Amino acid sequence: MKNKYFVFSLFLLLGLKGLPQQFDNSSFENWLQEQYISLSQYMDSGDEGLQTISHETDAQHGSYSVKLQTSIVSHDTLYGFFINFDPDHGFEGGDPYAQHVDSIVGYYKSGIVAQDTAWFLLQFRKMGAPVGAALKAFTNLDNTNAWTKFKLDTGMPPGIVPDTLIVGAVSSNALNENPGLDGVTDGSWLQLDNIKFYSGGSEVTPMPNNDFEDWDVRTIETPEGYLTSLIFGINTNPLTIEKTTDATDGNFAVQLNTVVSQDNDTIVAGITNGNSIGWPPNGGLPINIIPDSISYDVNIYRVTGGNDDTSEIGFIFKSNGNILQYFNRYYDISSTGYVHENIPINLGQNPDTLIFYALNGRTPGSYMKIDNLYIHTNSSSIDDLTFERLIAFPNPADDILYLRFNATESENIRVRIFDINGKELIRKDLQNLQGNKDLKINISQLPPGNYIYSVETNNSKKSHVFIKR
Image (cartoon, rainbow, N blue to C red; front, side):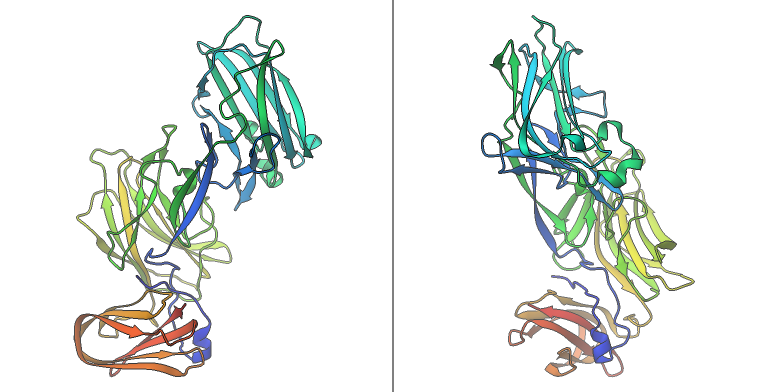
């Protein structure tokens, strides 16, 4: 596995000035398995990778109920919802339904924030024309922690039989979204269960999954330390973000795919080490250095004849929340394998934050693979060493730590392992080392904790932090 760099204050304890700061999970070796849940037979916020819909064992009937909740994340309003139609294309879609319905009965709990409104809606259609509808608004005046019955009339004329049912629910006022309300919608929630249809006082066929008993669970791998376009869809094929073994450094790289969603929208793959999906992203890597350059490896595939099929990789430098400068490169043609890129950095003042981002093109089928992000500084440059590249992996390590380097000239090299107090614990000497080499160091005798490895030649030295698990 590749080096996972950590920013520690150990260099203050050891007097090792100038340890370089690096992006966490800079070579995409570490991936998290996350479970996403969505309501069967519906499109919902779980399909978009959002944790704003859940199945609750607190049910009015059966084993589960559905809970929708609104969250504000970095000024982005994330609603909980489920629908069986396409809200972006004139409410197209729906499910076949062919029975007369004059009333609807269901149960709810809610905790709606003041000035916000949650909604439950249904519409019955015949040959595309509405023949009955029901709309229930939930405000803070309806808030209750006990299951409460509600009843709605559809207004469907007697004898009319529809052919289509439109149904949906949302935890906030998404039907009339007002950005000015974003700050007050955070936390609104709506819980529903046991929704039944009636005609002339007799129960008829309900809406699909009306007891909210059926759920789909999917496990997705995401790169640790990054926010990605997976939040816009976890049911696409392929996913917008994938782990690939086509890597330049270690076992894995990240692949960004532009895809078409289940409602025929194009999703552009994106990734950032920031913590928001707005522009420019918030969060990022805290830094106290001015890099000389940033390098990475990229492999591009563009669909022939694609429209606006340009991808972008960029780095934003901030100070006190303000953008100092950003550096980027665009790619609009396919590459023949990986290309090593190095972007020179010229800043007039010290930044405090560095944000990485990458966006793929807009043509479905195009992809971009990225690996081996690296920040170069005068203090951390390896150009004054005779190593073209030095990598320690895995990090964290269990019993074995590997050092991989490429010595351009014949060298005598000393490798040492220190604890955080500067005590030397392990030493290895290699004579006349040249070319690509992997050095295997047994660290099984070391207790779990933070350590420093140091690699020295006759007139130079390079040190880094690693973790023993």
